[in-house]
Image (cartoon, rainbow over the protein chains, first blue to last red):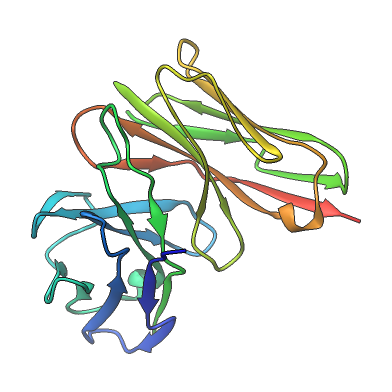
Length: 118
Length: 113
């Protein structure tokens, strides 16, 4: 069964360092997403990506964050200068149709990358 | 404001028993509602997805219902198993042509032997 894969599974970094989280979405999917889940809290939408550009982003997704699909298979989330409050589990997801609309796509999540900022 | 509220916050049941989890939402205009199962430290796994025109959807021992008029959904788990212990998350999308999904805080289910 196709799946979304994420690396690393866990990363520890010092405050102020840059971090890149990587994801390989399901191969025939067109829509890609990043979500964040702070320990003990609900999952929060960060950004959606379609046709090589950001289609929507939340208030959390500020200038410290960026996404990229560098080679047609990987989908990355970069945090330029990490803060303590960036410590969370970051989930990548993909779908073959958009999540809203009359024909919503099934949303498949990866297992997450746990980021710990010290 | 678009919100998704789930109840109860946590639930303990004995193996073999049934349970029902609730979700109320204020997302508008409504597009679809999904239920996910999330094991601790893992990614959410889809159980059901329902659009406006659907009022029930089953996936094995999981049955979800949707009342779009009252903006309520429920997830019924039949003959619970120890492996059902997890968080169950209700997720609602708005029909605005966008991609945002609004997650509930989840119900933490503990199934005891």
